[in-house]
Image (cartoon, rainbow, N blue to C red; front, side, top):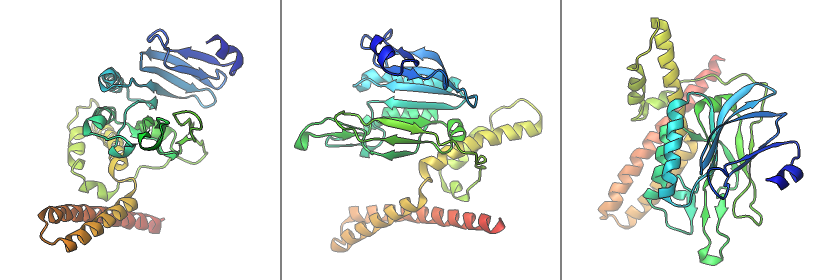
Length: 313
């Protein structure tokens, strides 16, 4: 670490998790005039901190990740993050190299199984985290091999909870070209503005989700100590947070979802016309048609509600 202190950002502070792993797998550096950083927990796969922005006194938890290579070795990482979530109701940001994928489309050049994505997806659902808006490179790592041996993966991510999203509503993670490295460098921009906070708006389309009623019932039956008005307000606040997560998970890009399903429906119907007695295609066509109708209804409901809001303004 001595050379880093002397040659890279000489007035900055540095720390590493060398005490938790012989390779010292994570190095953090920050300008103490801009940020105050409190180290809360260190492990072989993460450093968990609380960061305060000195210019605004905004503070949030931030976990820096470098996951191990095998699923078994990563299990303690998911357990640790889940334990943080159970104790934390404040703004929380998680970023780094998870060495794990979340979607079937996150790797090309090598097969993806459901077991590959399940552990991270389960952990993120438990922690109620969603992905910060990303721009730039989609795949963040490749093995630099030649021809058919080349593998591309999306294993680096920036995730946040709704409280952090509210604090930095315009944030985006920019993944830069990797150059000679195997990973793409990432820059997180928060784009602070003087605009007022975007108000919460309830969208009728959410009621079509099978998760909507269980979500409301779960929070409505929670015990809250206080007067009647306080109890109602607190329960509505909990519901609002989960509705924002629901919106990001299934309703964040309605037009794109509708268009994608429309193309899938047309493609399966073309196949069915060429092979009318294929019962597998018929079943698939019925499933996609139902999904398309739901997506179309959600899109129309959203447009209707937005147009009414603009007219009232």
